[in-house]
Amino acid sequence: MLSVARSNGFSLIELMITIAIVGILTSIAYPAYQGVLKQGYRSTAQADLMALAAAMERHMATTNSYAGAATGGGSTGAPAIFQSYSPASEPIANKRYDLKIQSVAVNGQSYVLVAEPVSGTVQGDEGDLFYFSDGRKAWDQDNSGGLSNSEYCWSC
Image (tube, rainbow, N blue to C red; front, side, top):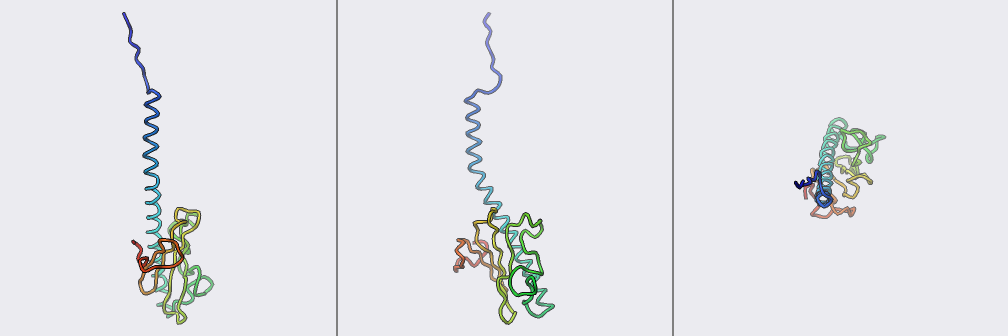
């Protein structure tokens, strides 16, 4: 009587096809995952800028001026009244943005806040986020260092 040999396991071709499929799926999924990470950290920075703006309003309510809200009692630089980085809820080692008071008007009645991406992180190639005391929001999407009319929104 003839016996039929049964093979247990996978052939090399089956294994190579499986690896190729996993590689293709990974090459598609990883950039999408990076995009979701960037968007999440950008949203967190926007929320932290809004929280810094609320802190600026509290400072205004107590001092009648936005001046003096920065570190060392100055008008610009790292805020003394709020975290100087975002995400503010995480340790500084995980920061993705530096929060700064970019300018305060001479009369102390208006300000511009900025969240600058930290180089060497996922956010490193993104442009700055801005919040103005009059409620305008801007995102330097092309990272040019200037704002065009189309960049005066956070969700453009």
